[in-house]
Length: 119
Length: 114
Image (tube, rainbow over all chains, first blue to last red; front, top):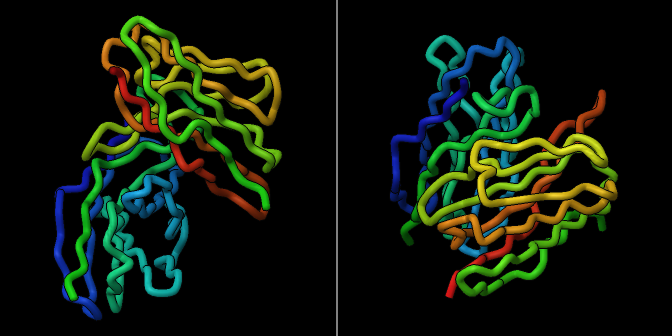
């Protein structure tokens, strides 16, 4: 079984400041991938960043970086220099096995963090 | 441009009716997925298909059915057996090659029971 936990239902950050969104995971699969998605109010899922379980370095994509601590099973998203357009729901997700679906390589999602950037 | 098209964007269903949500992709991806999202929640897997003419139940398949007659199309039917169908439904596809790995999502269908 695999599980993603996001313990921050809502976060506020001042414009231009950095913010960290927490994500912890649990899996027995030796190989897995971790994703972060942004979901604005319109509903589409926007891919932000990916980290493979065997990647030696933390992933970075522009203002997004992933703080991957494998021993702690955490994959926190760091957004630098927050912008008003960053206000959205953010989901952490993991590729692997589900407890009922087998090796479908589907994504398992956390419950999300609603980020609000304040002007 | 390649992508996933979901239609309709909004759908209203009366109690006891079946409705079908469309999902079409022109990405040539083999694997496709249907997810359900309730307000303030993450996505939960309903059904998935890894190849044409094959599909498997996800974590919350009861009250739903799918078909995969063509690679491009993976429609989801919400049957009258689904007791609480009001939700946001997202379709996704997956690419996995030696040089490219990732998921693409459609823009979703918001289903409301009236």
